[in-house]
Amino acid sequence: MPDKCSRIHHLACRPIITDSRGNGLVLATPDPIIEAKNFFMHKAQKRNKFSVKSIVDVLNQEKKVVKKVFGPFWNEGETCLLFAGSGVGKTILGYDIAMSIANNTHYWPEDMSEVHVPVLYCDLEMSEDQFCKRYEGCKKDLFVNNIFRFTADDCAFELNPENFISGVKDQIKRTGAKVLIIDNISCVLGNPTEKIARKFMNDVRALRNKYHLSVMVIGHTTKGKAGKPITQDALGGSKMLVNFCDSACALSRSEKGISSRYLKQVKSRSTAELDGVAELRLTDDPYVHFEFVEYNEEEDHLPQKGHKKDGRVKFDEAARQSVIDLHRQKMSVRKISEQTGIPKSTVCDIIHKLDSGESQVPPAA
Image (cartoon, rainbow, N blue to C red; front, side, top):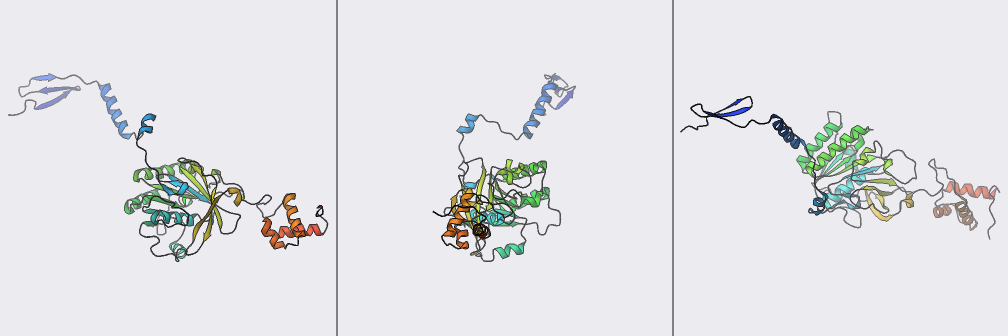
């Protein structure tokens, strides 16, 4: 038997249900204002990606265990910024971190990573030949099969933020990587404006959240004054990059020697800021990498009082007197330089002025 409600007509927004005999019943008229409000609220809810919870609910929910990605410097799920000057060793440290994550290979006294997952390393500076030469001395299984090197060597297009993000997204899906290292952001952004830096970091954060990544962005430092403590202001380009990161650390040369460096944490949202710095030593045995020496103070790695950027030195009287006292003990110029940290040329200058009578120094007791 056919359904009595066989046809539905709408007349001036008033739905009428009619049966087969034409008898109808007019239903309640919908309020067009309410209907429009409900329609737009529904669309807004679909667009709205924000989350609102009471603080009590946030505190009472199950806490996620935060794992270390790279010691006290970088935690799982965070965006970390690593910056350093040209030739200091950013990429060397970047690959050290990648190997620590991928297969627990490291030269620190304790395990630096609690997550061992595939890593996508965006190497935008070194060529393939340069990479092979740098790591030719390492074992074939050192990089295993879960470190993937993303390059732009064969790109037939200009590298820009849009096609870079698109390419990274495709490779994350292909490799299943859970750690992303971008080396170097200057290759993608150049010297960015605040607007460009903000958009790029927003795109990186969207990738991180969608694919549950831990991200490290590597950048350059500015040509600041040598011998000064490192701060967030040392980052080249836009400081907006620091604002969008959860943590940041800087690698710098040390006055202790040509192979000495130190790593300093300059920002951390999830942990207390690290007290002191990590001293590292650069070595090429069996391949180029950093070895941990000890934790100490940043001032241990800065030039002694009186050192100037142009290499000339002006010491206070205490330092000058030390040189003179050691000279009177018949110590050689080389040993005086080694003991005081004062360049040999400066030691010679102080002694010459003493012998010629230009320096007015009290006689030895």
